Length: 95
Image: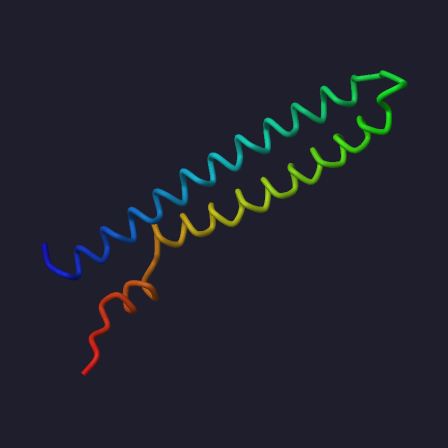
């Protein structure tokens, strides 16, 4: 295995790891969505303040999970399909 193929292999591995992280973020978003759905169904008067805070935290969690999913999906796409700029950096040899 030469340096060129090792660099491409490293880029593909990074892409697969980013793709896995994107799926985990998507799963986290689904779980948070389920939490919001369950919390809107909770109607305990004594716990209304706590419920509202938990609903807000769940919405923030959905937003964070969505942003992470998009970011890691873009990173995975770049490393799996393109990656030329990073490959050039890996292949650069100083004089």
